[in-house]
Length: 463
Image (cartoon, rainbow, N blue to C red):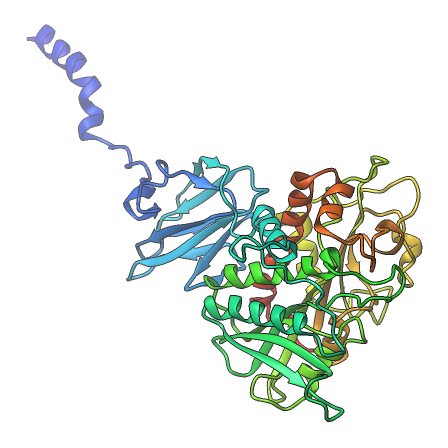
């Protein structure tokens, strides 16, 4: 009997776990969280593209790192964390072309978490250098087949110019085709309707709130014949067809984003004649001008795009890249919150080098910071630099960002007949290099806009 009892103990001992302290069931994120409607461990994400997600269960949550953006109801989530609820939460994930790893943390209602590593493949970014180049080529090329090239050149402002009117109509059609409420703002100060002081294309997107406004723009006019310092131009590829096409691409990307404030996307005229176009929009009382009863929170300006880091000069030095926030009233302190957005985008999300310098100096001096930044390749900081349409909105108290590539001594074709798309590609080492440079600044400005929109401290300085 003793032998039988001992034998039974030995046989049953390994089975005691089945009836004793059973192991807790492992976390299974797929029960409550999916990416593109599949188990997140089976999903594959693509760089720079939108991906849908769903999250269920009260107390459950997902979180991402800085370079994987979360959107719910069309809006960016600054905290990078989304909580489940009684109803299914539907949202979107967005990587950048510079994201290398996607690690999503899933947390259940008990506080237990698991990191999900999602494979990442090259995608077609929602704003990209290839699309920019193709649109640039269409606009600047002249041929007999209007389906292959538009020939929207010679866009000089200030005299009766059918070419400018034709270009403005084309740009207006682009925004209208994307669903924006779009207007041509024609301001005539001297009584002659054939010679408007300014002719701007203004596209509007309604925000969630009705008490604020924000915007982005670029000037679509180019330096007229005889203009200094290079004698004027006809393509104005770098100054500023490049910025014009950038705003057109942002309009396409913003269709899928919901903003807090009413948003304008504008193509200005008469920048080369003294910012007359943006001033006309900001200081006239029309239904589609800048609203005088709403807080103007921020404005982002795109002028002279693409000849910039990571592209390199023939010498091997990289071209300069400028992204300046303002106003910069106190050179010893940070004046505006949008500077934090500027730095977050470039260094935390896009992972640009923070202190890349050359042996020498870039271009012409800009302001009181020039002694510190003359040799800095990625010149990302607060600055008083003017000379473009952001000044119009900065003067009204808006926080601003101004994007600019090489200028003056760093680009010899500035305001000259040589300012063509072919020349732009040539000076940076080819079309592929130009597309890379343009793609970086496109993503910088896109991210700045969606993040600033959700930052409550990016407000008018006079508010």
